[in-house]
Amino acid sequence: MAQPPSHDAHLDALEEAVNKRIDTEVSTLLDNFKEIITLSHIADKDHFVADHDAFQAEGCADSMVRAAQSLYLLSDS
Image 1 (cartoon, rainbow, N blue to C red):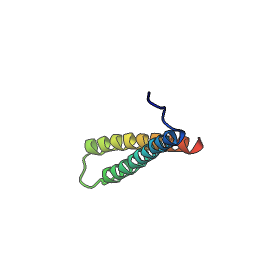
Image 2 (cartoon, rainbow, N blue to C red):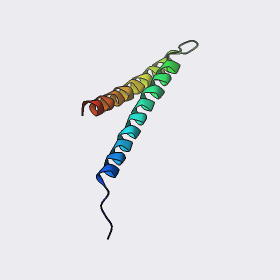
Image 3 (cartoon, rainbow, N blue to C red):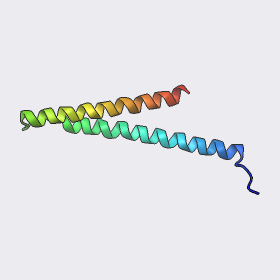
Image 4 (cartoon, rainbow, N blue to C red):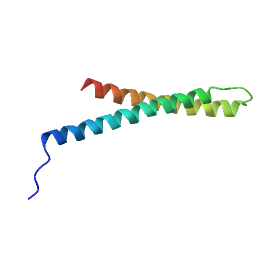
């Protein structure tokens, strides 16, 4: 008969899951910030491309807000 996982094993698995989530959210923040910086270069862009880039930057900012909220909720618990 299999024994249930020990309390320490459960805590280790929980810690690993939280650390993975933190890594993912921080990576999301960094990647989107880099993308916004890349999109902010406006030299030699026509109006359509500039508007398209602005729309993409808004999407990146939205992702950054969600990642920051997720990290906040982790730190609050």
